[in-house]
Length: 433
Ligand code: EPU
Image 1: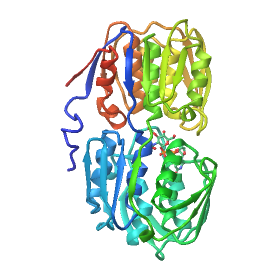
Image 2: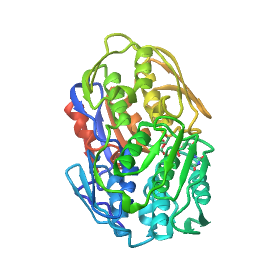
Image 3: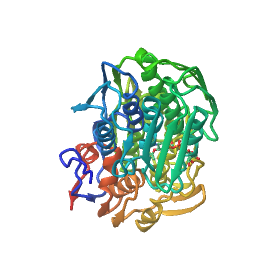
Image 4: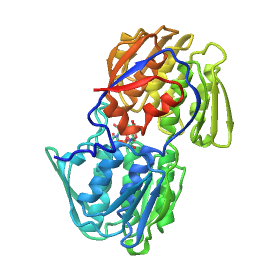
């Protein structure tokens, strides 16, 4: 059984004891982005010689599992500090076992590049956060168009290339899937001929992947638009090189929420204005004071926060991943906030617990209404995925009394040292077993 290295991830302790009611103040740094670095790690499979270096990689459990997947397929890698070095050798194994594949969503991204290199792959169904139904049809349909035969039996996905190299194809996505777009970009980089992705995702994490692939020698145009064109190259034309992971805009928003809900004043380093226009729009609606200087965002709560109206949709709209945090934030705004999440249906893991803590929330389907402002009170609560846990964590930091929150395991999937960061800002969180 695969075990996460306990030196890197604390698997023994899952409960946090949070003392509420302390203003968060000071300065804090955002880590590299989880959702940017994971596909970049998969892209390290592509070049067939030399070395690929990834810098500013977040030390989170999804990173360690992805490194473990690279290892089991025979790709040597070394993590030192926040830098990963990957030897660019062809994979030796085409089998990704269940105990790894089922732990992360991004394991599906290995399907295309391994089949493109070795002609076949066996993979267990990917895992990831339980956000309701998370189909993989976009991934499967795209690979089929590129000349891959795929069979899915129970939890096992078996893929075989009809020919190598895989062939470029015109692929129109049924929705702008982030993972689907990343998967096709990586696979099509070493396919023969041209691939066109229509209705592609435009998230900054996709742009970061395109930059990496192009810097390796890939030929991708259309960055930032929903039509991406990839002219395939041979893997021997690709060279590794060094690539820096962009700051995590989701962690940034998590810290903003915690600081705002505790009515603190703090500066966050790692703010990229063009990645965060939708977040700033919400801050404008709430009336919170903020200042941007280079990559520093300083926020300050001077007045009562106003309610806001927001739609969580694919970029450039606000991310669905921020919906749970915004729900929590809305409990501290005076009036009715309406949040519409059009990406996931009933992504509501946080809501019963926020209600138990005193929030006034009604939620159905894709809509959430929060009536604020509410006094939140510490409770014994459970976080069931990364963003639900961080949403409840923010509520606990702002609430009266102590909260016992289970779900540190989930936080470690998406945030490195989040407890240390919040405590550095005057929070009081202890890990208990
Ligand atoms: N979808 C399909 N078919 C597919 C794939 C997706 O119908 O084959 C649908 C999904 O059901 C969903 C929508 O498309 O309604 C968007 O899913 P997407 O494929 O974009 O999600 P993902 O790539 O699996 C990434 C992030 C998630 C984030 C979503 C949406 C990573 C590793 N994960 O997932 O992040 O919620 O995009 O932005 O990049 C998180 O960080 O907490 C997290 C869950």
